Image (cartoon, rainbow, N blue to C red; front, side, top):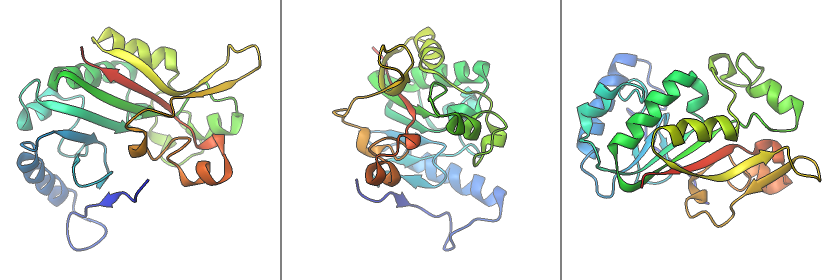
Length: 218
């Protein structure tokens, strides 16, 4: 997997003005909203897999706010949405709003790739790090610890067909088992996964895994 493309908001690595970040982001997204195909990263933090993707962040595209989406898009125009470690920062009700907006603005046959910390992970240290208020980076802002069952239910309720890509299963006779679809064509874009995280690839570290689903609009 190649390195991600970091797109800075100015000539420096960090932007200190949230107002400038919001203003710049809105102008950027208005211009990029006409790209074809339209591949959108939500919660990108200025980082996209490559320059064929469009980045967005909460300051100028709050995924639970339909009005923010309508600022840039008409319904049914986006080909692919990537949300990597975003939905754990939403409540269950907010996740429903976000899933509904994704469905509305995706094209027919479009899809969303959703990655979150896995609430079924068997390692207690992993759970302690990612649970709401946990010890890990940004866990202070986590609202949900998602499992496949809970996340699938949200997206299916909002019209999607859900394909699990990477997840832990506690119901195997052999104990906790990690399932992953190695042939998933968009796996190369996922950085926090068994094959996408450098630590996981180098050390076979299953603590670097995520719960990943591919939610498809029929």
